Amino acid sequence: MIFNIKMAKYYIFITGGVVSSLGKGITAASLGSVLESRNLKVTLMKLDPYINVNPGTISPIQHGEVFVTEDGAETDLDLGHYERFIKTKMSKKNSFTSGKIYSEVLKNERKGFYLGSTIQVIPHITNEIKKCIINAGKGFDILLVEIGGTVGDIESLPFLESIRQMSIEIGKNKILYIHLTLVPYLKISKEVKTKPTQHSVKELLSIGIQPDILICRSEKNVSKYEKSKIALFCNVPKQAVFSLKNTNSIYKIPILIKKQGLDSYVCDRFCIKRPEADLSKWKEVIYKQKNPLGNVNIGIIGKYTELPDSYRSLISALEHAGLKNRLMINIQLINSKKIESLGISCLKNLHAILIPGGFGYRGVEGKIIAAKYSREKKIPYFGICLGMQVALIEFARNVTGLSEANSTEFINNCKHPVIAKISEWNKSINYLNKSNISSNNYSTMRLGNQKCHLTKGSLAFKIYNNSIILERHRHRYEVNNIFIEKIKFSGLSVSGWAYYDNHKLVEIIEYSNHPWFVGSQFHPEFNSTPRNSHPLFISFVKAAFDFKNKNI
Ligand code: GLN
Image: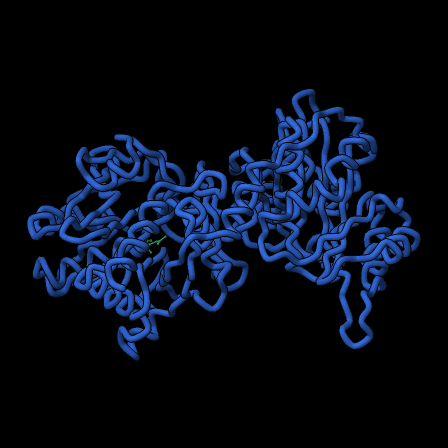
């Protein structure tokens, strides 16, 4: 009933076994990229078993960064990998959690849509999951669906049951199940072990899914002999067992996939005839990564520094800009709390400072110290979202003379709320949520793509070479227009504005008495890809290199 003519022609379901963190997302995205290079229209989708409606409220320390799509969905970081590997942009349709599926079914139940039925996992939850999958694939040749977690988890069962049903309903010739498992290497006996893979496949079989393809993730190459053994025990053809050993660059994976013929196996299985993939762009990326002409040290001053995945898109965007500038970027993740207790000594060898997005007061004063240090010592500074707000607070306090400048996120009734929610700027403004400003239980957020108008003659205008740009947002607080003229008068300029109803909102700040000092209210890192680096990052990395050369 839910199937229609616009649905994707083929579906590839990717599950994981033995352990998590095998790089399912990157593998799925890489396979997608190779298939895309064979002139197929490809998209990807992530199904996450956890109960949160989306990862927006989860600490980045747990699952890594929250990736924001153009249409404002707060999603798993794997969607970032998808956008960095394939050309299709992700949207709300490409990311679902168990929580989101259940909440939709419950909403429908309250509306009486199920006509008196008892609501059950099968068929109500599974039907909803299938509906979302079909929806995500509309208009594409191939939809790759990554199931989060590991086979055997209680929470992922409804997802696995749904994809099992799809092969019966859509037809086995249009569906492929790929299972990615760990094949551990035991140093002590110098051999790889296939048993965990066998058990994981057994687990899949017990829920009715026979994998078509196995991808063995391992430290070492899995030999022909071991592949044959896995094939025999797991009931798949020998040619359907592929090995992906650890690499020093994730951008090599499309090349490894093609080299082993995984994309050809997929095309043959679907009876798709397309030209060979042209991966020259990926080869160029690898070449540049391997042969930098110099290096720079860039510090990311944040508070989720113990898990680099908390800043995945940001780190990637810096690396992409490094490729463009032919520079290796030595990224130092520095906890801003450390600056609060030990001072600026840990910033001494940096050629540029980047303060990323974040929420909450912990570590903010350390970031303010770092912003002051960059401004005064003329070290290139890039502030993103909270990083921009912090730079503005620092400037307002130490240059404009608004000694108690702060954000109402941190001090609710501060004397100089230079950053505040629009509704707090001036109590007489009765601001209502409009189209792009979405409201949810945990307050009001400006989310997703929004237009920004750049000021002619500014650094931002020069960098983008455009007067209107589109960038992604994820924040609640804004620069308070009540203070902006005073701050501008003391030397900080505004080079990007957004327009909402009657409000003109600050999008980009710059300090021109400095080689490179830019803050953006939006997150440009979500728009950077290895094959298409973001102009702001390219310019920032170049400024870091110039700083290094000037200060040798
Ligand atoms: N906490 C700040 C706000 O909500 C900044 C958010 C961010 O950096 N993404 O406005």
